[in-house]
Length: 275
Image 1: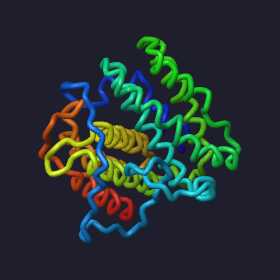
Image 2: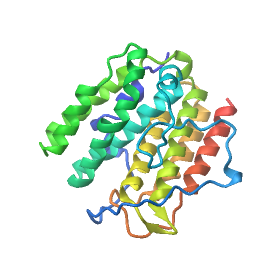
Image 3: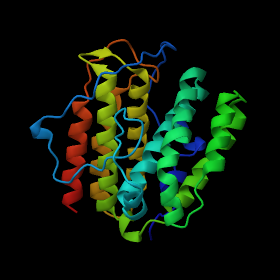
Image 4: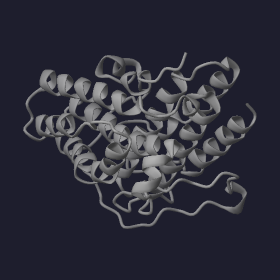
């Protein structure tokens, strides 16, 4: 049996209580940065090519085409995963009372990422979730309260699940799902490299993005079918990344680095090739 709608529905608001190891929140301030992502070393080179996803150029790439999102399931699921990551961290920030931070994460999927994937929905004959996405963004922007935001978030999670359901069954196999995890971790690494430069916090938004994308990677692993050994190994690899985010609002300095995310992506890739 393939869990064809469980992948994203598994991160509804009801599951968020135990989804994070974050411990405290410090400040509402966010520092913008134009510092480019740190390039990985030759030792971090990957066998499989990175799927570069269209977005705002802040670590999320700009070269994905409508055609590959329409035909390449992993590219399509990665784009959905990036959107889900923004929404996940935005929801958590809202629930924690960080309204200004929450607003920025809710605006990005609606204004940019959705436009990139909308043609793929048409090609795949799926309705998409523009209405639900708008409703959540509006609920946060207008600060309509936790109950309203939670309801909107859960409706959106269900709609995203329907968009996931159109991918091929073979794309739900453990090896393919691990490729998706790898892609999400790579993008998280790019974001984290922008956020933390020489131990200093330069961009809170990208720090939070990296967290959101990694949380979605955890959901993908949790919903993998079959191959319990690979699932447990992948879970351990991603759980080891928890110290990269001591809080939703980052501290001014950190000793963690993007290389930890790149390294985890490499380990996941090796795992995907072994099954």
